[in-house]
Length: 161
Image (tube, rainbow, N blue to C red; front, side, top):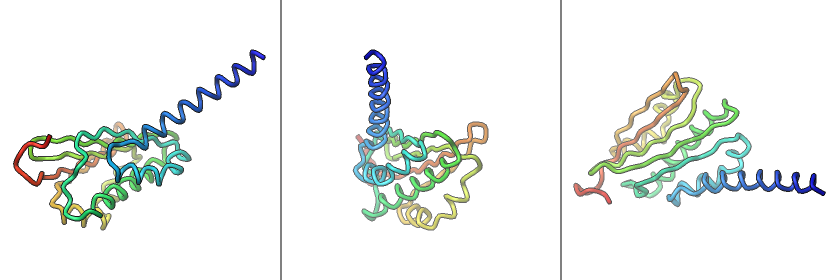
């Protein structure tokens, strides 16, 4: 009887951990990002990839409504593909505002410099160009980490709250 309780306790702990990781991955405060993460949830689970978000600014100033969706979709696909080389990984998605600028960061593990996959991506190039976004791509060889920073100019000169 005690052995069955131990097995049940272990199963509940595994289930609790799984639900915790899935919920944290799916909840990002951005409807668009939540939808894309949910669409990729099975791939994320199968590849043992977690998503960690910290979005202080969720409204990005895009000219076209579809640009946000396409940007997040392309970045997520690039990150998931890069993470396939790792047995376990986390993709970090962050945003914050600095007076008249919004800084959006997408950080993921990568074995080699992934810059060519970003710069050569026609969808990303078009979105970045059409929305006057300043982009910075930095690969950290020591930590095997790719960091994409996108800097948006707010539509007004006032501080974003």
